Structures are given as structure tokens and as C-alpha cells.
Amino acid sequence: MKKKVAIIFGGCSSEYSVSLVSATSVIKNINKDKYDVIMIGITQDGNFYLYDGEVDKIEQNEWLNDNTCKKITISTNRSDHGIIVLETNEIIKLDIVFPVLHGQNGEDGRLQGLLELVDIKYVGCDMFSSALCMDKYLAHELVSSSGILSPISYLFTKYDTLEKIESKVSHLKYPLFVKPLKAGSSFGITKISSVTELKVAIEEALKYDDKIIIEENIDGFEVGCAILGNKNLVIGEVDEIELEDGFFDYYEKYNLKTSKIHLPARISKEERNKIKEIALEIYKILGCSGFARVDMFYTKDKKIVFNEVNTIPGCTSHSRYPSMLREIGMTFEEVIDRLIELGEER
Ligand SMILES: Nc1ncnc2c1ncn2[C@@H]1O[C@H](COP(=O)(O)OP(=O)(O)O)[C@@H](O)[C@H]1O
Ligand SMILES: [Mg+2]
Image 1 (cartoon, rainbow, N blue to C red):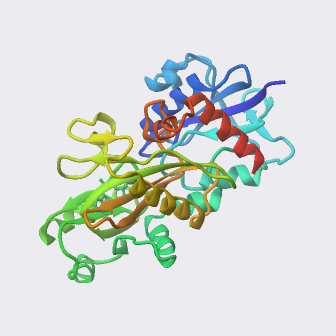
Image 2 (cartoon, rainbow, N blue to C red; image 1 turned 90 degrees about the horizontal axis):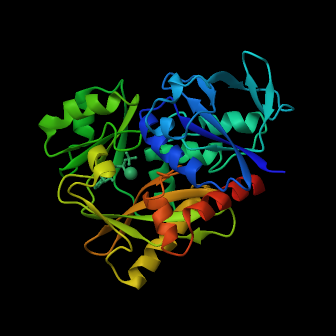
């Protein structure tokens, strides 16, 4: 019998639209001979629907208008192992859930915690690891306590005064990065070149989270590593982001107008191996399982500095994560298949 895989898309997150694109690609590339796909959409206000319409309507954000949509809820009864269609009370059992969600409420451990509570298996990092990786400050603290370089950063809350923040970061050299503590796709991030820009940058970051971090700029380029596995880890080829100026903001991430992704990164094999080694260490320190993309900076003096771990990285067939694994011979379909197996094994 085919396994029932629920692919969840959308989400109550600023990265709702990014998820629609990733999920469409996962649904199109999953092995349909092996899996029965159940599509579950979460609206931006957080309502769950079972969806049975055309896959393309997901990417176009027209899925919710489709007459196949039925409001559902995840059953909190462990014996149900599934979802309940609210209109009919029908219970649909699930073998595994693949949350193709990015950012808050999807990638940050909340959904993972709910699935653990109700004993439904799922793809990707567990609740604790997801939450830890989403918290840019704690992730830095933990990784740097193991001797891996991380940018100097300070944590603030919406209750901290501008004066306090200014004085705390006054010894740092500009430019600085002001970021929401938990977000993705560069939402709410500003690179500032002087103290006069601090106030506006803080306000922007606070739109996405009640906590923010301010960190030093790392001079160099960003590199990423795709990691797949629970115990025996597979690592993809290292990629490199070449920026013309500024930083890898939302527009550049999804349009690549002035920036470029080089795969493999334009550095020696030895240097790439060193980066892979550190990425594997970071993956283990932060307790990752299933998959994650570990992002680091590579500086001019060949230092590897941790940036962040994305526990549900962009997942279209041309996204960085599957591309890095394609370089070592895995197709996107094989990656999806392996992710589901890893979720079941855990
Ligand atoms: N400390 C830093 N030094 C240099 N560039 C940075 C730094 N932090 C972030 N950036 C730039 O900003 C981008 C987004 O920051 P990141 O922390 O990765 O947030 P997100 O989770 O939104 O991807 C990075 O891809 C990089 O280009
Ligand atoms: Mg990033």
C-alpha cells in the first residue's frame, strides 16, 4: 500500500508565498508511485484546509478559492494519527507529514511540537532543534561555545530603549546588521552604515519579532552546505553567493538580479572540505535531523564564520539545497524520497 504523505504549504508566516513555491515543487517531484499525496494548506491567518485542486493553483496563490477546500484540524488524539475534516468529522490517517513551510509557525518548532504531541511522524528537524536554529542569538551562542567562530552579536527586546541599544553596540565597527531574532528570507533585516540609521532599522526588525539582534558585519562571502541525514550524514557540494553590493536581501534571493550563486564555490577543494567539516559540526551541535542548510561566511583571511541554519530550506528543484545535492548525484525526487524515509526512521 502507498504511504500517505501530507504536504503542508502556506503558513501563518511572512514567508507564506515562498512556501507556496517550494511546496508546489515538492508536490510535482514526489514519487507518486510510492506515495499518496494529501495537500494541506495553511492560510496566512493560520486556518488549515485540505486541498484537492490543481497543483499550479498553490503557486499562484489561488488554492483557497478552489471548491475542493475543506476546513480541517489536526486531531489532538494520539490514536487518530491524522486530521479531522470539520464538516463531516471524517478522520484521515496520515503516515507522515512533510511541512514545506518557512519561517515562523512552520519552521520554528511550533508545528513540529504539535506533531510530536499527537504522535504523527514528520520530515525535518525536531521541535527543539527547529526552535534553536530559528533563534539566531541562541544558535550563535551554542555554536561559538564549541569553538566555531560566530559574528559578535547582541540581543535586544522591544522594551529596550534606543539609548541603551546605542551604547551597547557603540564599540562595534559599522556597517552593522539589524535583524529580527526569528525570521527568514531577509525580512526585516537592514545593513546600516552609521548610528543615525539605527532607529529606523530597529523599528523595521521589530515588525517581524519582539526581539532583535544587532551584529557585526563579516567581510567575505556567504557559503552554504546542504546536509541530509539523521545519523549517517550526506553532505552536498558547497555553494557561494557572490554579491555586487549590499546583502542577500529578499529581492536578490528570489531574482538574482545583481548577485550570483556559484556551485561549487570558487575556492579550492581543500577549502571546501574544511567548510563541509564545520557545517557537519554545526548540524550536530544544533541537534539537526532530516535535513538543513548550514550557511557560513568565508573571509578573505580564510576564516569560516557561522551565519545560520535553515531547517526547512528553500525547496524548489532549482533552490540551493537540492542543487547542492544534485552536484553529488542525487536528483530532487531522490532527495524528497530520502527525506521521507529519514522522517519515518527517527
Ligand atoms: N553578520 C553579517 N555579515 C555580513 N553579511 C550578513 C551578516 N548577517 C547577514 N548578512 C547578509 O544578510 C543576509 C540575510 O541574513 P540572514 O541572517 O541569513 O537572514 P535570513 O534568515 O533572513 O536569511 C545574508 O544572506 C547575508 O547576505
Ligand atoms: Mg540566510
